[in-house]
Image (cartoon, rainbow, N blue to C red; front, side, top):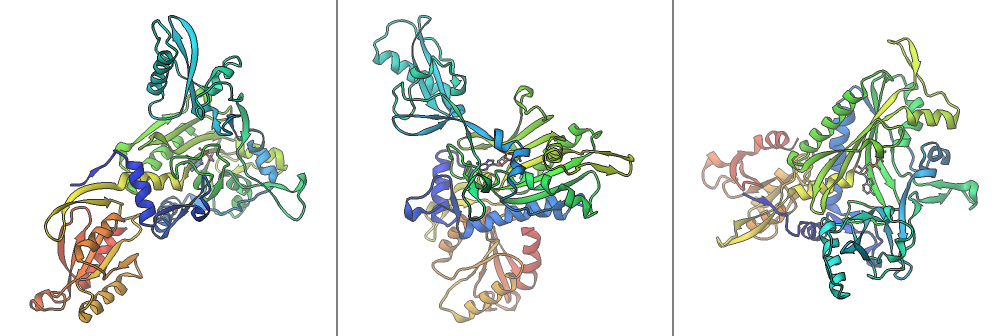
Length: 511
Ligand code: GAP
């Protein structure tokens, strides 16, 4: 059985994604552009399947959630009301020598303390081993400066916690020397643009940094369609843009990414904690349904003191990525803040008349918000595995298998004629391909030895392979005529299946 691989997993995934056409660096022919990614032929299918699964489960299969597609550029007042113009910032630090920029909360430092006295500072960028790296650097610092005495264990802090007098003494992670880091300053992450022919203040607009505000801005319009009653949700999938200071970890943190968000409106008297828990569980179960193991997921509750003043509670579903346990899906209880803000800034009433309670109120909101790209990366990490399998000559070789859940696999089934120079086999295989193609993504491949063709499909995670051979043509007797070999990717088990039963069988397996 294939085992999940952890050593160098990210390198292996990035290389496979490029080699097999899942993900490319954007504008690579011009040297690339940091924080932007392109999805190739297989990546685009995987991404679409993730989106479709979410949309079907979140919107189409529910009575209480409706869909929306709002524009990417909205009235700039939207972002004033939401607080993004004033407060959507990350703390940024510049290194004046190297001209590199860092996020202050991702730059860690520690005083080097010998016999109770601070003799200098060391710094590192966020990693899995911050404390160990700082300790190692402190030991090197002491040795290089030939300082005698007992080195105390380092106390790590992030750069936002540095006192003004410490800043000139903290070395830049780029140069290793102190004196070049600026104090942290707030950097607004929204991309600005201009609408219309004029390029002045009055024409400034923003690429949306989240899809959520579309749901709040259109809340009244959706309510007026009369299809919805509290509790109900509005869901949207679409691109968001953030000028991240340090995009990194492949597609984990990008400057252009796609979000799937849902605003669930409840009554002001509802038990928000019950609904919050309901949506956390829903999101977790959904992730498992697309092939992410429950064992790789955990919950992180934001501490009360770090929550925005209006927030009642936020829980992140965390995934164990190869570069550490990181946020995958945030589920926030936002009170009535967003609707109240839009009521205040737009002058439009945002209240809801509850015909059961016979009174008006501004609904409260539970918001599950996730990035498609982060789910896709979690799926890639969960799916990657290697095992040993025999080649055509029986020699064992390493087989790379992407164990995608059939729901999201980019190609559901590969169809192979055993030999490409036998017209009867090719004709039959093409008939099978055409039979399946209206219902699922099919890859037809007649090139190379059959074992090689299986391997190629294993590497891109195709769950099923169908081979048309001489038995299919009835050469071994009529009982095998019009049957094919159906091979299962993970077990490599093969069974003989009647062509007349193949479609129904596969539809059941891939949905
Ligand atoms: N409306 C709330 C909101 O946008 P968020 O935690 O900033 O909340 C929600 O973003 C989700 O969007 C995150 O949990 C993550 O999955 C995804 N996301 C946020 N920033 C991202 C980025 N720079 N690149 C990729 N995905 C991102």
